[in-house]
Image 1 (tube, helix red, strand yellow):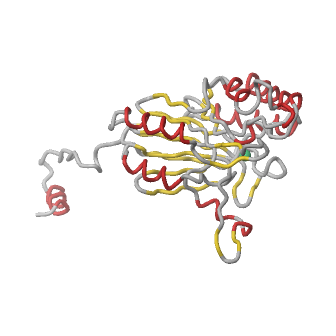
Image 2: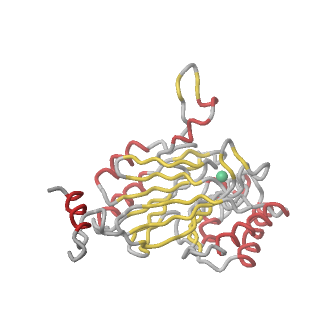
Image 3: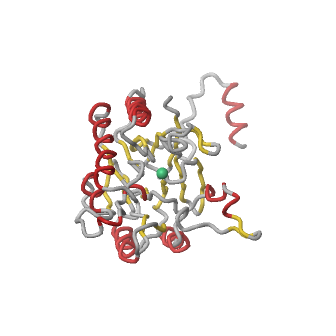
Length: 306
Ligand SMILES: [Zn+2]
């Protein structure tokens, strides 16, 4: 007699005690470990529209009935520090801190984005040159790190590697950081689910959005769009089935890829089309609520704040 027939005959026997649930995967409910908000590519400037919009976004995050516990900022906090002098960069960070102070009470964990790195040529000998300034303002202690929260292990990578002249960048995990990453994964309990965050995506079909990436009938995906040592990372994650999700921003586009047991999520942008309009390609400006569960699963809800 199969289960359906048991239920059928049980319904004909009113005095039979209710069937107790069997402990299979359908009946053991997963428990949420934490809900946080992914807020990224805010690209703030001291102008009214970006400041008001970021304020609105932060208020939207905190007005959720099911409120997130903290904010994970995926990088590109400010519009751009690459080619700007000190005072122009300072004004953008000031704008960010002013808006955050007035509109946010949640803790924020930051990840470095390419536009947060100070590459102004004349500042090469300044102690704040490169990532130092952003690391200090973000209060993250170093360009990459990991921490534990609510039963999950969070790994925040530095995916932005400036070219030697400081004028541009490519996306990859440098050898020193890769060694650290391998060690960090090795010492994490195999039962602890792992979330990886990198500003530039590790694995994302959003790189295919542009005809410009097709040359003579072949795809040419720049390392500035998707990490150039992705193959190495995919192999590494495959060795650690507790790596469950990898979040990113950078593309200002929204995608979800499930590959080898890892859910890769590219999470749009708060600024949409760099404030020129609130849609970039087909993705509307927004932020994501991320729910992590104790069974290692992840759910994302992308929200428009205006
Ligand atoms: Zn960006």
